[in-house]
Image 1 (cartoon, one colour):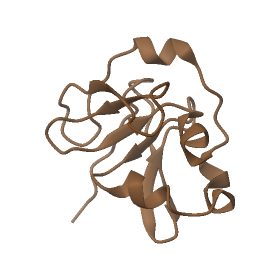
Image 2: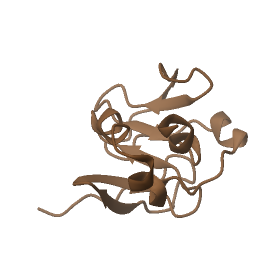
Image 3: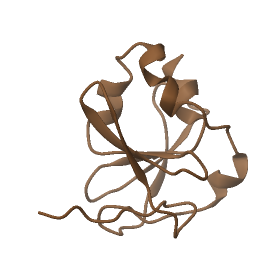
Image 4: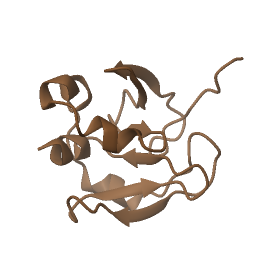
Length: 113
């Protein structure tokens, strides 16, 4: 079965690149460094040591991206903006349909601390 091409919810036309970290496959935008996590991948990823996440935490936080609403790269639903329970300063973009989560560049680094 061929995998669907996933586009960045913030950069719109940029294709997400797949990364495997400790057997979890996530998708990251090479431009804004945002990351897509399928349902339940983010909580599992946050249990890993920060050194394991280093390749995903290179992005810088950009407050301008919080103002951009996006569509789910999996099913094109409008993403909902919600405050992260672990750090209320981080605003997650969550798909109400597939329950995936988008973190803007730099947000994973903040949550991994």
